[in-house]
Length: 123
Length: 225
Image (cartoon, rainbow over all chains, first blue to last red):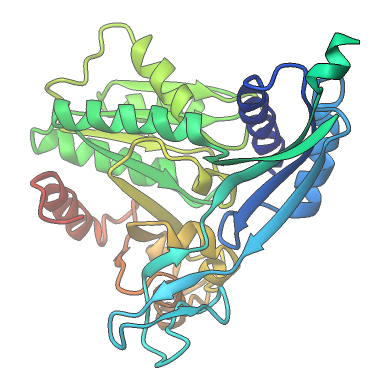
């Protein structure tokens, strides 16, 4: 249940990055989460709603992309998507695999913002 | 009004990761081997650590421990009986330790210095989910599992076991009455983290502890982990 801490970290990070665009409103926050990141999306969405309340990010959507685990096989030298999180084996040759190439991401990919146009500002 | 997409590509836990990287280089500079012990509540982390601290001290090593719990300093008092410097971290509801807590408790630790220390153990809050995301600057992450918990624990919590550098099975002295299937447990750990070092231990009888202490000495010399 650390989704609340994760949500708070996202708010801090986005607020910091959005400061480069004064007056802009953040409409959407896009995340890339690995399947091994231990984050439950439903729980994160729930915590997000609570965390952004009363902040400049209130109303911003959280869009989550879940990434599968990709392993690199030392035996057959191929990358492949893990079929199950209960067995770290190469999907091609079945050998045990411990070299992870993807799956632990906890990343803010992008934000969508509404910027105030200079003309509007002048009016 | 203009809508635009701003690429950020930044880690959500970037602040923690940066702090942890700073801690890691401090630990390396001080020549101290740091281990992060993670398990469910009740696995026996504290008993395992009591034995480890006591034995390492007998062998002349300089050891210390930070211990995380939501509330109480019971574990710190138990561990301090070994004679090693121990500091309790109370998270007051937070389910994991993070790098900032480690930094704060090391900095504010009166009379304590990293320099001259051989081993620093960090006993995490009992939880098999959340601690896996938070780097504490450790060299070795140890996942512990007791014989009473069920052999499929690694399959249920793959993130944690997959991120571990070593695995310890505790309470081996009661494996038989618990109907513990040793082969199955070893197989399951290996399915999640192929090739990981596994120690089968009992802090009560001392079984398996010699191998564990040998591993620590190797890791400290830079050969093990």
